[in-house]
Length: 341
Image (cartoon, rainbow, N blue to C red):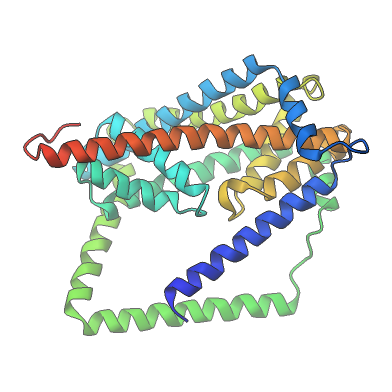
């Protein structure tokens, strides 16, 4: 099977799953006879308090700037310093790509940074892995707090989900996939040993990746890195709270409810789907209905508006960043002696 066909089939499956989950979520949206479901969602948007939504957009941009500054910090110990502007543009382009290709943004933002200031992709990708591990740790800590504060409700909600335990067949399937993956890596290693150019390329790539991966241990201001990481996730929490306050149906929910919904939403966004589309639309309404007795139709409409507004911010920010990057790269080519941005 060719790589192009394999990629096409992967994206087809991802889009099919996304479409099914959106359809599944919309199925629970009950409207009056003759009323269109999308019109109902649009009416929910019109009824929202736009001041809270605009505040949420502002908080989102602050979180993106902090993420860009944190990435810039990680790159400094590698000897490849960049500017906050280049880092922010690359982060926003990565968000845009993630909406199309799940996790594709992690590679695309490294390539975007390379175009802007020649930072080696393998080095910057190593720092991105550090970022993701840091974010995973922050997410786990938040989930621990959420499940400690709302343990009864959240565990009761999880019990309602159609998640089956792993049987012998599934375990055997995972073992076969793992074995096939190990065999593929061993074959690739053997081929690399036989091919000098490929071997040299892999050694260079691994060395750069290792340099980026270990950059966190060489940071001069480790407490500032920790502060940025915690602040990013606190801002994410504030974004959720702002959106909940923007809707009459959910504005009465307290901070503990926001924490629960944030935990559910974070788990949904972790699914390998474009921007969490589909998984978010299925899990969050279910949580609103089960945990806080929000009517099904209102819960679905709220989720579509919430996720749609988040996505719009990423699309607009990413598209602008892509255009600015294109302009700067063109300018850089016309002025090769000018190394600045």
